Image (cartoon, rainbow, N blue to C red):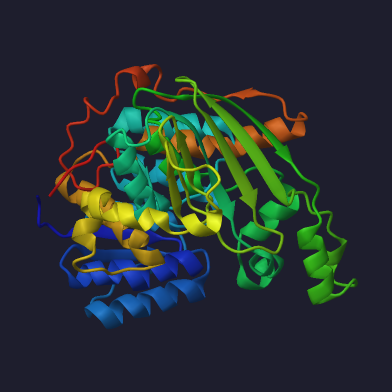
Length: 418
């Protein structure tokens, strides 16, 4: 494995971008893994803040700019991190790939199928991948379940579900103050706008793009009440936002059918009161895992056992089925979101340093992102089934676990022990 420091450009310095820079990337600098050569955001105050943080930590002065093209023009940069508003993800990613920079792109949905094909075409023309930085793929419980699935513990997998269940009313309602892109999206779009929590982990369980593919989806949205009511209560009836007819339904349910017969249910639930959950659930012929309650139920166990009695029963499976990556990570845990940010960014940095295919490649990125725009179409047409494109152009049949030559412990298509 290469010990080479990679040269990074960081594009997008809002709450997520600055948090990753401060909590992950600068820690990687201290460990000799990266250099930060440039920082960029549309807002000058954010750029200056990031510049000072890098300068204070490293003693070096990165290029700082409000124009991402100036970052891409820096010859020495090996890779860029794209952490901007969703609308500009693919524009910046494809420009970076054409400039010879590998791309780590934060999560978000696509606005058109054409954009997704543009991303794939750019990879196929340049040979440079865009890795979606889907941190949930590296969750401890998600990787426990993936390891168990790979070992056949749950039998044949039939159905998976998950989603993004997170009360974001305050963030969205104050998006204009916080300069956050979610507000304009919720005001103007009605779709599954954040599909990759938990589609990313589910795609690994179901071998999507590696012997399996998503065929079609159907999406429906509830009425929109929660965000409007929150705005009225917090800001008053005379506030301009109280007069907005919020487009985004409070709960969006998307059903996906796969080529190997499995079904997937995704839920977006972000504008009503609730506790946080990603709802990760895997159902097989020999057992199941459910994130809510963190329990595992196996064939032969009493179906009448109460949920309370099973809460956290998954914990006992870690001794035998802990994923090798987490066995290593627990020796020196660092980073945010219970380690998943550190792990997904480490996976990207390793792939850049070693010039290897990232564990989440461009085909995966496009396949997961497209769910947003396809769900938007389905919802607008009363839940009409919408075909999901095959971005691999048939290569999903050949791209199996056995075909994966990766020996990285960060691999998601097979279990690699260090």
